Length: 391
Image (cartoon, rainbow, N blue to C red; front, side, top):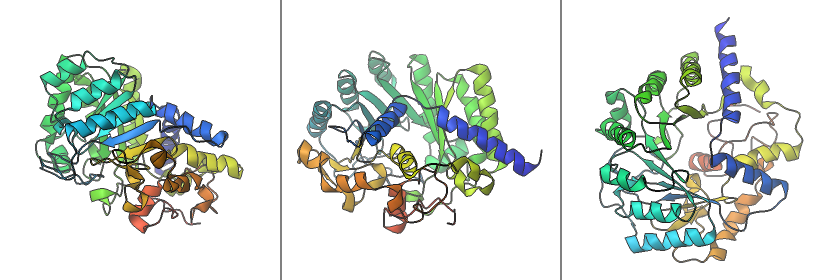
């Protein structure tokens, strides 16, 4: 088989996986986005919140989207424990279903366990994204007694090679992450996922990392290409080549045989850029169906909000710019936030408002991320900066 044909064959298989293998509660949120699009409605309240609970971090990932304060135990505009408790109570009162606690590094918050307990005990699915630095025996003992169907812990690890991982995330990051995974294994903590960011430095190590993880109690794995945002704004992402795709195919073969670590997220960036694969994105869709693909992918302000460490609220993580600030959860009430005119503007955008997308014949493309467009071009109406398709 010719190399180019093999490339296309692999991409088609992986593309099908991307659209088939989804994990809860993310697939549920996408279902809700589609539902509200079909009925031309918005929910009565946000259903999914990403909460950057602190800006403090003790590592220094060179692609950090939050541009957190590395090697800092101070942070700026940090809230008190009592203020964070107020935010938790508002989240509960609003009827939120899913909270992703991020940072910075969440385990640097002294009240993290109490926050997780309060959310989980109120039937809010809670996800914690950590570099592993604050995961200790005390953490494991406390979280072990929570309803394990209502939380998930994501550990960031980019390579099974300590030198490569530490180059990307900071000195000691490999040891922190693997120590956390060892503790989760000892204490039999379920719902542990390892998430990796693929760059030109670790792209050769993807398969080796997946195999390496089988010594721990890890039940899912995912990776995504580095995104041009935060510290990575001008960082070049790896080009999808046969070497990367062969690693992914080998990973899927191991998953099928061992059935231990499910591959739940395979984000290969803009496959539309590969001309041989354009048939994947060309369908005979009418304008409504084509726009539905865009709206079901982007949940900013429709089912989702993002809360910053100081309580400021934005439509999503990638629209964290002054222009899109919609209030502060400690100051503004529910109506002032959820029915803010900025959210209305975001909700009303269609794919046909986006320059470079409205006339594109790839109707099955989700058009990418408005936040990335704004970060690169200072407008949400430009096409995603990762897209190289000429229209």
